Length: 83
View 1 (cartoon, helix red, strand yellow):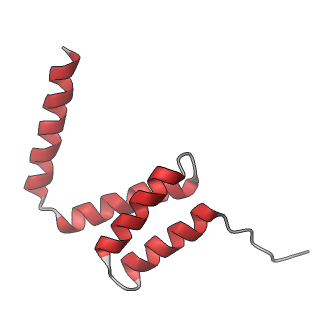
View 2 (view 1 turned 180 degrees about the horizontal axis):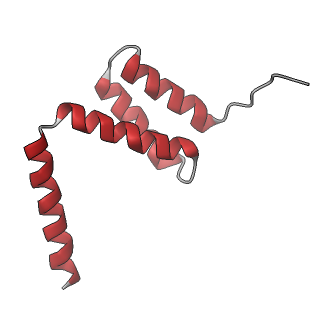
């Protein structure tokens, strides 16, 4: 029995982004790394984890009222385009 763990490219990229976020507290770098992973590895577990971490960063740095206003504007724009 082997304890070998096969780490994927997505796993390595997620680990780097996570370290930037929580170890070095470099949120701009972490956000860029998560965005890169989201573009290059759709459909992976790391994609889902990265999306959650991006949301965590956004909630940490953007005031709640500003988020609400942006969400409302986005929804209104989508609804206007659907009409």
